[in-house]
Length: 307
Ligand SMILES: NC(=O)c1ccc[n+]([C@@H]2O[C@H](COP(=O)([O-])OP(=O)(O)OC[C@H]3O[C@@H](n4cnc5c(N)ncnc54)[C@H](OP(=O)(O)O)[C@@H]3O)[C@@H](O)[C@H]2O)c1
Image (tube, rainbow, N blue to C red):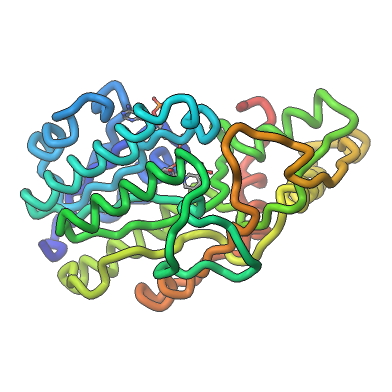
């Protein structure tokens, strides 16, 4: 299983998602691989997970596919549970049987968001929402399967394309003069490219030690630093103006509001701080600060028309 001269064979699921798209780029230097879309592997269908592992027999399977519609999951718990729980169990069992390593993404939403501390990977999960519960079920299925794995919990994901907070803010800047943005949920916005690049580095480092069992497990992978959605919105507009993508006069007035004034179907954790030190020390990495990653993402070009 250690990396031969032709590298590691890899397979990504969720090719058209924010993280999946970036993985298809970032994993290239590891070896030959392929990224499959939902059309090529529909995880809602029992048996599909086992089929793709059998057909492709990758050394490393990276699962970026998930049911990510947090509010809709409250009305579709069965489908969310199917994709985030049962399909992940099938993937884990198939990978365990074939000897493949499984890399999977989870979320800050597995925690209850109490307190002001940075949650560590070993802290006890207590999800508030259906989405969080189904993602926790996926984590547990992986752990129970005995597959060699990395479960990478991340938070507040954005990219230049896709439905995310950055693109929503840039679009709203062209439509509204006044925005109300929640200021009492604290976390770290994380660029999908950071997730993909860090995944590639961690997989490579792990492959070089023969995927030893000691380094498998749960890690937190998000940007360094912290902010609120309000602080994130301010930074998006500041950087977009600095990069010449928005005129200063276009920036809407932003009003900081509590979560109670922005009701959403699924409850959100107030504290989404994740401690990344275990990942950094296990794989000799340093995660970027969220402000720097945001500047880099925005500097790659205008994104306002993407959402
Ligand atoms: N987004 C966040 O803020 C956030 C925060 C914390 C953790 N995470 C986790 O990070 C991972 C990646 O998230 P992301 O932001 O890249 O999500 P995303 O952009 O919503 O992508 C999810 C992908 O899953 C695919 N998918 C949905 N149903 C499927 C099915 N039945 N079969 C196969 N594929 C299916 C989607 O396919 P289509 O393109 O065809 O719809 C999409 O490409 C997920 O595990 C998520 O739970 C995300």
